[in-house]
Image (cartoon, rainbow, N blue to C red; front, side, top):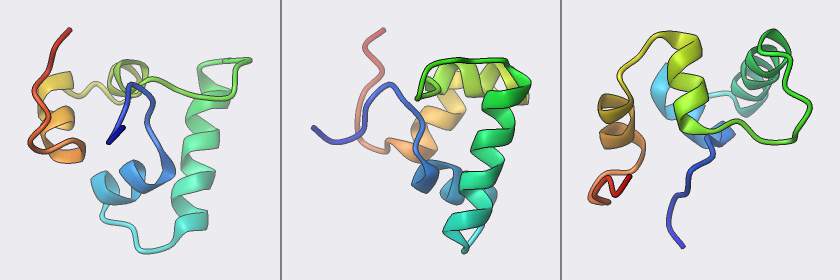
Length: 70
């Protein structure tokens, strides 16, 4: 399966224009801590809500060519 509903470190790298994996990973952990999430993964919608970004815009960047079927 290409993509998914969870945001990955690679997705954060792409959105932030960040070359370093560790920087994007740390940022994702910061978001997770700020949202007080206990589970391992963050959904794309949760990330968009935290960053106040439009879901459709982010989806088109990180999952190009995959239609939104929600």
